[in-house]
Image (tube, helix red, strand yellow):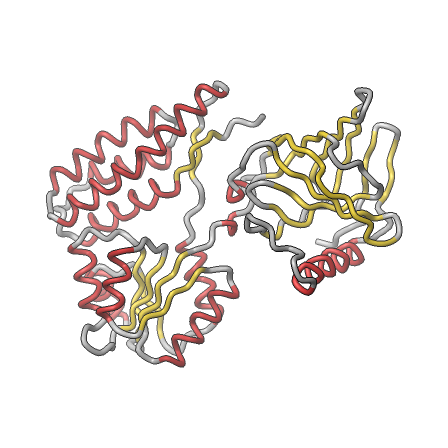
Length: 366
C-alpha cells in the first residue's frame, strides 16, 4: 500500500510534515545511517528496534496547561524511549503521552518526557522521548525479542554463512564445531533454537539430541541434514527433533525457520489496575520454577509428575487470564499417550515454551 503524505493534527488545525511518504522514508534512513556513522551517536544504553509508523498519537502538555495532540511518524523504539519526527520544535523536558500501537493492533498510552529535539532540515525535527517506566518492546514489535540460536556445524565455512544470515535477521548466534561443545552449551544456556548437523565428529547430532532430551531440554531443536526423503522427516520427528533443514540452505529457509520458532508474547486478559498488574507480574515470575520442575520431571520420565504440574498450571494460568497457557497445560494433562511418546513430549515442549513467552503485565489498555 502506498504511503501518503504524513500529517500532524493539532488542536489549532491540521499541519503537514513537508514530506511525502518516499521522502519521509529517505529521512528516516538517513537518520539511521548517521547514528551508525557518527562516533557516540546511537550508542544508547538500551537496544533500539526499528518502529516506523505514521499513526502514533502524541499528546504534549505545554506550560500553562495547554494540551497539544499530534499524529506523528515514528522511527525506532526501546524499552525506555521512542524516536519520532515532527514539523516543529518542542522544548526539552515537556511532559507527554504517546499512544503506541501494539503488535496485536491495539493501543497503549505511555507517559514520558521530551529529552531531545534536533533540527534535521526544513521544518522537520527529530524528537526523542524518554518513558516514565520501562516497557516491553516486544509488546509493540514482535521482532524486538532477539532469538538466541545455537548452531552446531563442523564445516567452518557453513557455520560462518549460517551465522551471517541469522545475524542479519537480528538473531543472537553462537556456533560450535562438534557435538560435545554443542551439548555443553545447550546444557548451560537457554536458546530459542538449536540447529544440529547430523554428521559431526566425536558426537553426532542425533546423539546430542538424545542427550538433551533425556535431560528434559524443551528447546526447539532442528536437524541440519542432506537427507530429504519423507521417511527421513518421520524418523527425525520420532527421534525428538522439532523440524529439519535440508542442505544446501538458503536465506529464505532460515527466515522461515526463525519465524516458526519465534515465540509471540503471551499476555494476561485480566483487568483491574495496578494491584492486578502486580499479581500478574508475581505469577509470571514464579513460572520459571514451574518450568524447571516440569523439565526435571520430563528428564526423569516421571509422567505422573508432569501431568500433575500441568494440571495445576492449567487452573492457575486460566485464573490469571493466560488462556493460551491454560490450553497448552490442559493438552498435556489430557494426552492419552505416555511420557515416552513423541507427541506427548512435543506437547510438554509447547507448554514450556508458552510459559517462557508469558509477560508480567496485562492486555488492559491505559
